[in-house]
Length: 308
Image 1 (cartoon, one colour):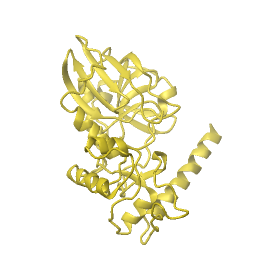
Image 2 (cartoon, rainbow, N blue to C red):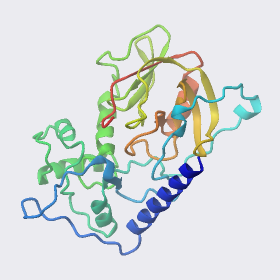
Image 3 (cartoon, rainbow, N blue to C red):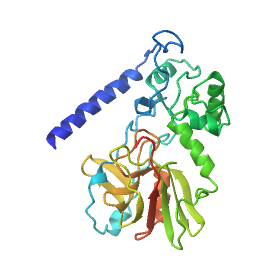
């Protein structure tokens, strides 16, 4: 455990040193060579190398893992006084739609360069199809203009035309808004069912065929920590749960499979690569879900998160 904490501390120190350097005044990065130039790098940006395209603010974490996936919590009945305490509110702007972009794009943007991103995003082909563009999976000037227009309308920052997880996640949410269960993947039951679609990274609650909550975006388990699929039940609700392993708050926790739970995070639900198994939610969404689900309600999980 001591060695683990030391390694974790070292990783955090290195990570925040990089962040500080990235957003230091005057930081500038040269753009990559144009495609076709001898020695030019592959302009496809891997998702695991993306960073927030603009500074998220002092109170928004850059990474928000949920560490209790492998540990079932110690269940007890919270007192009325404990339940009366509401989790702290999220800092203003903490749920802003900040796209994750290549490091070079983020540095250029910070330096005042606002040109279209020339990088191919991890969701390039999906975004092209959604916008009814030529779906060749390669960034072009026309693609960038169309993606930028969408990002601007949806208040996604930076609106650089990069087809990242926030842009694609927003498109998924818009497509599912009216009929999230149009494909019938979540079974219809007489009672409440919390539906977790890992493929689209969405959740909602339905009672019979009526959707009584959502859909809303989520952040599920990353590779090696997948959110478990199949049928589950909410077996414990703990409004102010705290991860003792990583000293991390898990507001509005509703546990449904061992250490896996719905709960809020104070960072972005779009941040790659994912949680450690829990279903992360925006604070306001988790607060509303808290009042929609009860102990014993069913949870159904299906699909597969990209990259897991």
